[in-house]
Image: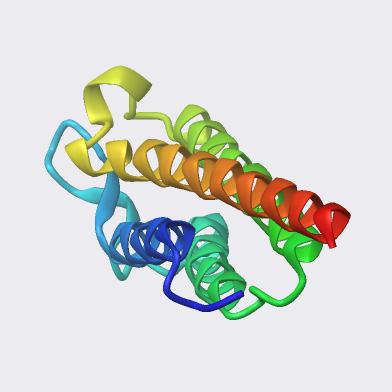
Length: 141
């Protein structure tokens, strides 16, 4: 297998999206203050930042694990679960804030993790396709 595969591109896009998302504001209160995201690193608000950085790094590392397709698929699933955990953490922090309603305080940057999940699912599908091709080619020999 080589690194120039479409799923490598999907994994790179997911890593870039989550890297951007880690530094963008995710929750803004009614006064316009950033509650979570960006460089707001106080208390519970720092957990999603580090989690999003971990997801971006793990997505980037997954690109270079192309020799072990099973492990690469596992890393894709772990990434998706971590993104869902990050979104759940964001929602729970939003509910803990007293002057923050969840729907009114979300920013348009919150679409980025959903797009990252889509790209990770596309990468997972491509990796599964490669495994199927490799199993089929070894059967012919």
